Image (cartoon, rainbow, N blue to C red; front, side, top):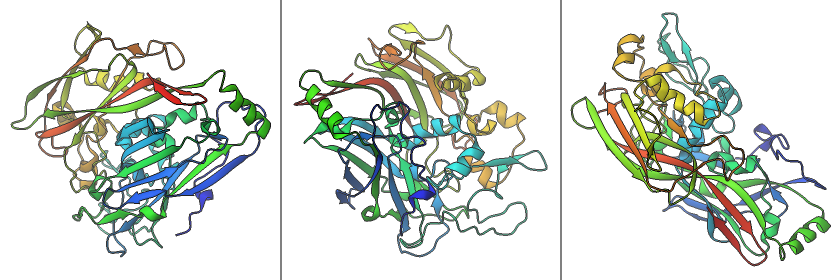
Amino acid sequence: MTTNLNEFFNLGLESTNNPVNNAGMINVFRTPVDTSSANLNRVTFKFPKSGLLTGDSMITLQFVTGDGLTSNLTPNLVNGAVGAIKRTRILVDNKPLVDLQRPGLAENVKLYSRNTQIELAEKEYKMMGNQFRTTVNSEGEEAIDIQNIRYCADNDQTGGDIGLTKNRISSVSNSKVYGIKLKHLGAEFLEAASLPVFLLGHREIVLELEFHSDCREYVVDPTGAAIDASAVKISLADMELVSTHIMLPPDVEENEKMALAKRPVTYPLLDSYVIKGVIDASGALGKKNATYRINFQNREVHNLLMCQVNTTPINSRVCANQRANSLGKEELQLKVNGQNLFDRAIVDQSLIYQLTTYSEEGRTLKIPYNAFRVDGTSLASYRQNASELYLDYRGAFHYTKVDFSNGNLGVFGAGTLMKTACEIDYKVTTATATNPKQDEIKDVFFYATISKLLTIGASQVNISY
Protein backbone atom coordinates (compact mmCIF):
# COMPACT_ATOMS: atom_id res chain seq x y z
CA MET A 1 0.00 0.00 0.00
CA THR A 2 1.41 3.41 -0.95
CA THR A 3 2.22 5.60 2.04
CA ASN A 4 0.76 9.10 1.90
CA LEU A 5 3.05 11.05 4.21
CA ASN A 6 0.91 14.19 3.97
CA GLU A 7 -1.77 12.39 5.96
CA PHE A 8 0.23 12.55 9.16
CA PHE A 9 3.37 14.52 8.44
CA ASN A 10 3.56 18.31 8.70
CA LEU A 11 7.07 19.28 7.72
CA GLY A 12 8.60 22.01 9.85
CA LEU A 13 5.98 22.20 12.61
CA GLU A 14 8.11 20.22 15.06
CA SER A 15 11.40 20.02 13.21
CA THR A 16 13.43 21.92 15.79
CA ASN A 17 12.84 24.10 18.80
CA ASN A 18 16.19 25.85 18.45
CA PRO A 19 16.97 28.06 15.44
CA VAL A 20 19.96 26.92 13.41
CA ASN A 21 22.37 29.51 12.09
CA ASN A 22 22.95 29.38 8.33
CA ALA A 23 20.50 26.51 7.96
CA GLY A 24 19.61 25.41 4.48
CA MET A 25 16.65 23.35 3.36
CA ILE A 26 15.03 20.49 5.24
CA ASN A 27 15.38 17.12 3.49
CA VAL A 28 13.21 14.05 4.00
CA PHE A 29 14.85 10.65 3.50
CA ARG A 30 12.82 7.47 3.11
CA THR A 31 15.14 4.62 4.08
CA PRO A 32 14.14 0.98 3.53
CA VAL A 33 14.86 -1.82 5.99
CA ASP A 34 18.56 -2.64 6.29
CA THR A 35 18.16 -6.08 7.90
CA SER A 36 15.10 -8.00 9.05
CA SER A 37 14.34 -11.29 10.78
CA ALA A 38 10.85 -12.78 10.81
CA ASN A 39 11.90 -15.33 13.45
CA LEU A 40 13.16 -12.64 15.82
CA ASN A 41 10.50 -10.05 14.82
CA ARG A 42 13.30 -7.54 14.42
CA VAL A 43 14.33 -4.93 11.85
CA THR A 44 17.21 -2.45 11.63
CA PHE A 45 17.63 0.83 9.75
CA LYS A 46 20.69 2.95 9.08
CA PHE A 47 20.14 6.68 9.45
CA PRO A 48 21.37 8.90 6.63
CA LYS A 49 24.33 10.86 8.04
CA SER A 50 23.32 14.17 6.57
CA GLY A 51 22.75 17.44 8.39
CA LEU A 52 20.87 17.53 11.71
CA LEU A 53 18.39 14.75 12.56
CA THR A 54 15.13 16.36 13.77
CA GLY A 55 12.19 15.45 15.96
CA ASP A 56 9.89 14.87 13.00
CA SER A 57 11.68 11.63 12.11
CA MET A 58 9.55 8.50 12.32
CA ILE A 59 9.10 4.92 11.21
CA THR A 60 6.15 3.59 9.23
CA LEU A 61 4.64 0.16 9.81
CA GLN A 62 1.66 -1.84 8.67
CA PHE A 63 -0.31 -4.64 10.36
CA VAL A 64 -1.57 -7.54 8.25
CA THR A 65 -3.74 -10.51 9.20
CA GLY A 66 -2.16 -13.93 9.21
CA ASP A 67 -4.40 -15.23 6.44
CA GLY A 68 -4.63 -11.92 4.56
CA LEU A 69 -8.42 -11.71 4.97
CA THR A 70 -10.53 -8.85 6.29
CA SER A 71 -11.00 -9.05 10.04
CA ASN A 72 -12.62 -7.25 12.97
CA LEU A 73 -9.19 -6.64 14.48
CA THR A 74 -7.80 -3.16 15.11
CA PRO A 75 -4.78 -1.77 17.01
CA ASN A 76 -5.49 -1.31 20.70
CA LEU A 77 -7.42 1.86 21.48
CA VAL A 78 -5.00 3.16 24.13
CA ASN A 79 -1.80 3.86 22.23
CA GLY A 80 -2.38 2.24 18.84
CA ALA A 81 0.60 1.00 16.85
CA VAL A 82 3.14 2.07 19.49
CA GLY A 83 2.09 -0.95 21.55
CA ALA A 84 3.57 -3.32 18.95
CA ILE A 85 7.13 -2.26 19.81
CA LYS A 86 8.79 -4.59 22.30
CA ARG A 87 12.19 -2.90 22.33
CA THR A 88 13.85 0.14 20.73
CA ARG A 89 17.59 0.60 20.38
CA ILE A 90 19.50 3.45 18.74
CA LEU A 91 23.18 2.62 18.36
CA VAL A 92 25.85 5.23 17.62
CA ASP A 93 29.07 3.58 16.51
CA ASN A 94 27.65 0.37 18.05
CA LYS A 95 27.19 2.07 21.44
CA PRO A 96 23.61 2.23 22.81
CA LEU A 97 22.26 5.77 22.85
CA VAL A 98 18.69 4.54 23.46
CA ASP A 99 17.70 1.11 24.81
CA LEU A 100 14.08 1.07 25.96
CA GLN A 101 11.77 -1.90 26.37
CA ARG A 102 8.00 -1.53 25.90
CA PRO A 103 8.12 2.20 25.10
CA GLY A 104 4.33 2.30 24.68
CA LEU A 105 3.73 1.97 28.42
CA ALA A 106 5.90 4.97 29.26
CA GLU A 107 4.47 6.90 26.31
CA ASN A 108 0.91 6.54 27.62
CA VAL A 109 1.72 8.93 30.47
CA LYS A 110 2.97 11.58 28.04
CA LEU A 111 0.13 11.07 25.57
CA TYR A 112 -2.60 11.39 28.20
CA SER A 113 -1.00 14.21 30.19
CA ARG A 114 -0.10 16.46 27.25
CA ASN A 115 -3.33 15.81 25.33
CA THR A 116 -6.99 15.29 26.09
CA GLN A 117 -8.77 12.18 24.86
CA ILE A 118 -10.44 14.19 22.11
CA GLU A 119 -7.15 15.72 20.97
CA LEU A 120 -5.57 12.28 20.79
CA ALA A 121 -8.48 10.74 18.93
CA GLU A 122 -8.52 13.54 16.37
CA LYS A 123 -4.78 14.08 16.05
CA GLU A 124 -3.15 10.71 16.54
CA TYR A 125 -5.52 8.12 15.12
CA LYS A 126 -4.02 8.55 11.65
CA MET A 127 -0.50 8.53 13.03
CA MET A 128 -0.74 5.71 15.55
CA GLY A 129 -4.30 4.40 15.48
CA ASN A 130 -5.19 5.88 18.86
CA GLN A 131 -8.96 5.66 19.37
CA PHE A 132 -9.62 5.88 23.12
CA ARG A 133 -12.58 8.14 24.01
CA THR A 134 -15.09 7.95 26.84
CA THR A 135 -18.43 9.57 27.53
CA VAL A 136 -21.17 9.68 30.17
CA ASN A 137 -24.46 8.11 29.16
CA SER A 138 -27.97 9.29 30.04
CA GLU A 139 -27.95 7.34 33.33
CA GLY A 140 -24.77 9.06 34.51
CA GLU A 141 -22.58 6.04 33.92
CA GLU A 142 -19.19 6.31 32.30
CA ALA A 143 -18.76 4.33 29.07
CA ILE A 144 -16.70 4.01 25.91
CA ASP A 145 -17.84 6.59 23.35
CA ILE A 146 -18.88 4.06 20.73
CA GLN A 147 -20.23 6.73 18.38
CA ASN A 148 -16.86 8.44 18.04
CA ILE A 149 -14.18 5.77 18.18
CA ARG A 150 -12.89 4.72 14.79
CA TYR A 151 -14.05 1.13 14.85
CA CYS A 152 -16.49 -0.68 17.10
CA ALA A 153 -18.67 -3.61 16.09
CA ASP A 154 -20.84 -3.77 19.19
CA ASN A 155 -23.34 -1.05 20.09
CA ASP A 156 -24.54 -1.53 23.66
CA GLN A 157 -27.00 1.37 23.47
CA THR A 158 -29.04 0.29 20.44
CA GLY A 159 -28.40 -3.44 20.39
CA GLY A 160 -27.28 -3.22 16.75
CA ASP A 161 -23.87 -3.34 15.13
CA ILE A 162 -21.68 -0.50 13.93
CA GLY A 163 -19.27 -1.24 11.10
CA LEU A 164 -16.74 1.56 10.59
CA THR A 165 -13.96 0.66 8.18
CA LYS A 166 -11.14 2.86 9.49
CA ASN A 167 -8.18 1.19 11.20
CA ARG A 168 -9.31 -2.35 10.43
CA ILE A 169 -6.43 -4.76 9.89
CA SER A 170 -6.51 -6.60 6.59
CA SER A 171 -4.13 -7.48 3.74
CA VAL A 172 -1.13 -5.40 2.70
CA SER A 173 -3.16 -3.64 0.01
CA ASN A 174 -5.92 -2.55 2.42
CA SER A 175 -4.41 -2.18 5.89
CA LYS A 176 -3.53 1.31 7.06
CA VAL A 177 0.10 2.42 7.25
CA TYR A 178 0.92 4.00 10.62
CA GLY A 179 3.62 6.51 11.43
CA ILE A 180 5.38 6.44 14.81
CA LYS A 181 7.71 9.30 15.58
CA LEU A 182 11.02 8.47 17.24
CA LYS A 183 10.04 10.64 20.21
CA HIS A 184 7.39 8.02 21.02
CA LEU A 185 10.05 5.30 20.97
CA GLY A 186 12.47 6.68 23.54
CA ALA A 187 14.18 9.43 21.53
CA GLU A 188 12.29 12.31 23.12
CA PHE A 189 15.55 14.29 23.33
CA LEU A 190 15.12 15.13 19.62
CA GLU A 191 12.38 17.56 20.64
CA ALA A 192 14.90 19.61 22.60
CA ALA A 193 17.75 19.71 20.08
CA SER A 194 18.40 18.14 16.70
CA LEU A 195 21.17 15.53 16.55
CA PRO A 196 24.24 16.47 14.43
CA VAL A 197 24.56 13.17 12.55
CA PHE A 198 26.78 14.74 9.86
CA LEU A 199 29.63 14.76 12.40
CA LEU A 200 29.70 10.97 12.63
CA GLY A 201 31.66 10.56 9.41
CA HIS A 202 32.27 6.86 8.72
CA ARG A 203 30.59 5.78 11.97
CA GLU A 204 27.07 4.37 11.71
CA ILE A 205 23.91 5.32 13.59
CA VAL A 206 21.46 2.42 13.58
CA LEU A 207 17.82 2.06 14.67
CA GLU A 208 16.87 -1.43 15.84
CA LEU A 209 13.24 -2.34 16.52
CA GLU A 210 11.96 -5.57 18.05
CA PHE A 211 8.23 -6.37 17.94
CA HIS A 212 6.03 -8.51 20.18
CA SER A 213 5.63 -12.04 18.85
CA ASP A 214 2.15 -12.31 20.41
CA CYS A 215 -0.25 -9.88 18.71
CA ARG A 216 -2.55 -9.88 21.76
CA GLU A 217 -0.05 -7.46 23.26
CA TYR A 218 -1.23 -4.73 20.87
CA VAL A 219 -4.33 -5.88 18.90
CA VAL A 220 -8.00 -6.02 19.99
CA ASP A 221 -11.26 -7.34 18.59
CA PRO A 222 -14.07 -5.00 19.74
CA THR A 223 -16.61 -7.78 19.14
CA GLY A 224 -15.09 -9.68 22.05
CA ALA A 225 -14.05 -12.68 19.94
CA ALA A 226 -10.93 -14.62 20.91
CA ILE A 227 -7.67 -13.76 19.16
CA ASP A 228 -4.86 -16.16 18.30
CA ALA A 229 -1.33 -15.08 19.10
CA SER A 230 -0.41 -15.26 15.39
CA ALA A 231 -3.60 -13.63 14.03
CA VAL A 232 -1.74 -10.43 13.09
CA LYS A 233 1.79 -9.87 11.82
CA ILE A 234 3.81 -6.76 11.05
CA SER A 235 4.86 -6.47 7.42
CA LEU A 236 8.59 -6.11 8.08
CA ALA A 237 9.56 -5.77 4.42
CA ASP A 238 7.23 -2.77 3.93
CA MET A 239 8.56 -0.73 6.86
CA GLU A 240 10.40 2.53 6.26
CA LEU A 241 12.45 5.01 8.25
CA VAL A 242 11.25 8.48 7.30
CA SER A 243 13.84 10.88 8.71
CA THR A 244 13.97 14.66 8.38
CA HIS A 245 17.28 16.49 8.33
CA ILE A 246 18.15 20.17 8.51
CA MET A 247 20.78 20.67 5.83
CA LEU A 248 23.73 22.95 6.50
CA PRO A 249 25.86 24.69 3.86
CA PRO A 250 28.96 22.65 2.90
CA ASP A 251 31.37 25.23 4.32
CA VAL A 252 29.58 25.19 7.68
CA GLU A 253 29.75 21.38 7.86
CA GLU A 254 33.44 21.35 6.97
CA ASN A 255 34.26 23.94 9.63
CA GLU A 256 32.38 21.90 12.26
CA LYS A 257 34.18 18.71 11.26
CA MET A 258 37.59 20.42 11.44
CA ALA A 259 36.73 21.79 14.88
CA LEU A 260 36.21 18.22 16.17
CA ALA A 261 39.97 17.70 16.18
CA LYS A 262 40.33 20.43 18.83
CA ARG A 263 37.06 20.22 20.71
CA PRO A 264 34.57 17.31 20.78
CA VAL A 265 30.88 18.11 20.43
CA THR A 266 28.74 17.29 23.49
CA TYR A 267 25.04 16.51 23.36
CA PRO A 268 23.33 16.24 26.80
CA LEU A 269 20.06 14.32 26.81
CA LEU A 270 17.48 12.66 29.02
CA ASP A 271 17.22 8.92 28.53
CA SER A 272 14.92 6.24 29.93
CA TYR A 273 15.47 2.58 30.64
CA VAL A 274 13.55 -0.21 32.36
CA ILE A 275 14.15 -2.14 35.57
CA LYS A 276 11.91 -5.18 35.93
CA GLY A 277 10.29 -6.62 39.03
CA VAL A 278 7.24 -8.61 40.10
CA ILE A 279 4.53 -8.24 42.71
CA ASP A 280 2.75 -11.31 44.04
CA ALA A 281 -0.86 -10.30 44.63
CA SER A 282 -2.12 -13.86 44.14
CA GLY A 283 -4.38 -15.71 46.52
CA ALA A 284 -7.17 -14.22 48.57
CA LEU A 285 -7.98 -10.52 48.30
CA GLY A 286 -6.30 -8.40 50.92
CA LYS A 287 -3.05 -6.63 51.79
CA LYS A 288 0.18 -7.46 49.94
CA ASN A 289 3.64 -6.08 50.67
CA ALA A 290 6.62 -5.67 48.34
CA THR A 291 10.00 -3.97 48.73
CA TYR A 292 12.24 -3.17 45.76
CA ARG A 293 15.89 -2.11 45.81
CA ILE A 294 17.10 -0.37 42.66
CA ASN A 295 20.79 0.34 42.21
CA PHE A 296 21.05 3.34 39.90
CA GLN A 297 24.88 3.12 39.90
CA ASN A 298 25.51 6.76 40.83
CA ARG A 299 23.42 8.05 37.96
CA GLU A 300 21.46 11.30 38.08
CA VAL A 301 17.75 10.37 38.14
CA HIS A 302 14.99 12.81 37.19
CA ASN A 303 11.91 10.63 37.74
CA LEU A 304 10.77 7.05 38.15
CA LEU A 305 7.60 5.57 36.64
CA MET A 306 6.05 2.41 38.08
CA CYS A 307 3.37 0.33 36.36
CA GLN A 308 1.97 -3.16 36.90
CA VAL A 309 1.42 -5.25 33.77
CA ASN A 310 -0.11 -8.67 33.08
CA THR A 311 2.61 -11.31 32.89
CA THR A 312 1.04 -12.82 29.76
CA PRO A 313 -1.19 -11.16 27.14
CA ILE A 314 -4.88 -11.95 27.30
CA ASN A 315 -7.79 -11.32 24.94
CA SER A 316 -9.02 -7.78 25.41
CA ARG A 317 -11.61 -5.61 23.64
CA VAL A 318 -10.00 -2.24 24.27
CA CYS A 319 -6.48 -2.27 25.69
CA ALA A 320 -4.74 -5.57 24.77
CA ASN A 321 -1.76 -5.71 27.15
CA GLN A 322 -1.04 -1.98 26.88
CA ARG A 323 -2.22 -1.25 30.37
CA ALA A 324 -0.93 -0.48 33.85
CA ASN A 325 -3.26 -2.34 36.19
CA SER A 326 -4.66 -0.87 39.35
CA LEU A 327 -4.09 -3.24 42.26
CA GLY A 328 -6.45 -1.60 44.73
CA LYS A 329 -5.57 0.71 47.59
CA GLU A 330 -1.87 1.66 47.71
CA GLU A 331 0.70 2.68 50.28
CA LEU A 332 3.99 4.08 49.00
CA GLN A 333 7.28 5.14 50.58
CA LEU A 334 10.73 5.60 49.02
CA LYS A 335 14.15 5.85 50.62
CA VAL A 336 16.57 7.93 48.55
CA ASN A 337 20.23 8.28 49.55
CA GLY A 338 19.38 6.89 52.97
CA GLN A 339 16.51 9.32 53.67
CA ASN A 340 12.76 8.82 53.40
CA LEU A 341 11.41 10.77 50.44
CA PHE A 342 8.09 11.44 52.23
CA ASP A 343 7.62 12.30 55.90
CA ARG A 344 5.25 9.37 56.16
CA ALA A 345 4.04 6.74 53.73
CA ILE A 346 1.46 8.07 51.26
CA VAL A 347 -1.87 6.24 51.58
CA ASP A 348 -4.32 8.79 50.16
CA GLN A 349 -5.18 7.71 46.61
CA SER A 350 -5.57 11.30 45.46
CA LEU A 351 -1.97 12.02 46.47
CA ILE A 352 -0.81 8.86 44.67
CA TYR A 353 -2.47 10.22 41.53
CA GLN A 354 -0.98 13.68 42.09
CA LEU A 355 2.58 12.31 42.20
CA THR A 356 2.40 11.70 38.45
CA THR A 357 1.20 15.27 37.91
CA TYR A 358 4.26 16.64 39.71
CA SER A 359 6.54 14.56 37.48
CA GLU A 360 4.82 15.81 34.33
CA GLU A 361 5.45 19.49 35.13
CA GLY A 362 1.94 20.01 36.46
CA ARG A 363 0.15 18.24 33.60
CA THR A 364 -2.37 15.77 34.95
CA LEU A 365 -3.45 12.53 33.29
CA LYS A 366 -6.60 13.26 31.25
CA ILE A 367 -8.32 9.96 32.00
CA PRO A 368 -11.57 8.95 33.74
CA TYR A 369 -11.55 8.57 37.51
CA ASN A 370 -12.11 4.85 37.43
CA ALA A 371 -9.53 4.25 34.71
CA PHE A 372 -6.93 5.07 37.39
CA ARG A 373 -8.53 4.06 40.68
CA VAL A 374 -10.08 0.68 41.44
CA ASP A 375 -10.17 0.10 45.19
CA GLY A 376 -12.86 -0.83 47.69
CA THR A 377 -13.98 2.77 48.07
CA SER A 378 -14.34 3.49 44.36
CA LEU A 379 -16.13 0.21 43.73
CA ALA A 380 -18.68 1.07 46.39
CA SER A 381 -19.25 4.76 45.67
CA TYR A 382 -18.81 5.14 41.92
CA ARG A 383 -21.67 4.35 39.53
CA GLN A 384 -20.57 1.23 37.64
CA ASN A 385 -21.32 0.46 34.02
CA ALA A 386 -21.87 -3.20 33.09
CA SER A 387 -20.63 -2.82 29.50
CA GLU A 388 -17.71 -5.08 28.65
CA LEU A 389 -16.06 -2.20 26.81
CA TYR A 390 -16.13 -0.13 29.99
CA LEU A 391 -15.03 -2.96 32.27
CA ASP A 392 -12.01 -3.70 30.09
CA TYR A 393 -10.36 -0.29 30.50
CA ARG A 394 -11.32 0.08 34.18
CA GLY A 395 -8.12 0.39 36.18
CA ALA A 396 -5.98 0.31 33.02
CA PHE A 397 -4.24 3.69 33.44
CA HIS A 398 -2.71 3.24 36.87
CA TYR A 399 0.63 4.98 36.39
CA THR A 400 2.59 6.15 39.43
CA LYS A 401 5.47 8.50 38.63
CA VAL A 402 7.75 9.98 41.29
CA ASP A 403 9.62 13.23 40.65
CA PHE A 404 13.27 13.51 41.75
CA SER A 405 14.07 16.84 40.07
CA ASN A 406 15.35 19.69 42.23
CA GLY A 407 13.97 22.71 40.38
CA ASN A 408 17.04 23.46 38.27
CA LEU A 409 16.84 23.66 34.49
CA GLY A 410 18.73 21.58 31.99
CA VAL A 411 19.87 17.96 31.91
CA PHE A 412 22.77 17.69 34.33
CA GLY A 413 22.23 19.25 37.75
CA ALA A 414 18.44 19.11 37.59
CA GLY A 415 17.97 15.59 38.98
CA THR A 416 19.07 13.64 42.06
CA LEU A 417 22.38 11.78 42.10
CA MET A 418 21.64 8.32 43.48
CA LYS A 419 24.62 7.50 45.71
CA THR A 420 22.99 4.46 47.32
CA ALA A 421 20.38 1.94 46.25
CA CYS A 422 16.85 3.38 46.14
CA GLU A 423 14.37 1.44 48.29
CA ILE A 424 10.70 1.35 47.29
CA ASP A 425 8.26 0.12 49.91
CA TYR A 426 5.01 -0.67 48.10
CA LYS A 427 1.88 -2.07 49.71
CA VAL A 428 -1.47 -2.76 48.06
CA THR A 429 -4.86 -3.92 49.30
CA THR A 430 -6.56 -5.76 46.44
CA ALA A 431 -10.30 -5.20 46.12
CA THR A 432 -11.60 -7.18 43.14
CA ALA A 433 -10.86 -10.40 41.29
CA THR A 434 -12.48 -9.22 38.05
CA ASN A 435 -12.09 -6.15 35.84
CA PRO A 436 -9.29 -5.65 36.61
CA LYS A 437 -8.10 -8.94 38.03
CA GLN A 438 -6.03 -7.92 41.05
CA ASP A 439 -5.46 -11.27 42.78
CA GLU A 440 -2.57 -12.57 40.64
CA ILE A 441 1.13 -12.09 40.01
CA LYS A 442 1.98 -9.00 37.96
CA ASP A 443 5.13 -7.79 36.27
CA VAL A 444 6.29 -4.41 37.59
CA PHE A 445 8.14 -2.12 35.19
CA PHE A 446 10.20 0.77 36.60
CA TYR A 447 11.02 3.37 33.95
CA ALA A 448 13.95 5.50 35.15
CA THR A 449 14.71 8.82 33.42
CA ILE A 450 18.39 9.72 33.77
CA SER A 451 20.94 12.26 32.53
CA LYS A 452 23.20 11.10 29.71
CA LEU A 453 25.96 12.75 27.68
CA LEU A 454 26.81 11.92 24.07
CA THR A 455 30.30 13.12 23.07
CA ILE A 456 31.27 13.05 19.40
CA GLY A 457 35.01 13.37 18.78
CA ALA A 458 37.20 13.18 15.71
CA SER A 459 38.15 9.53 16.31
CA GLN A 460 35.54 8.12 18.69
CA VAL A 461 32.09 8.46 20.20
CA ASN A 462 31.56 8.29 23.97
CA ILE A 463 28.33 7.92 25.95
CA SER A 464 28.57 8.70 29.66
CA TYR A 465 26.25 9.29 32.64
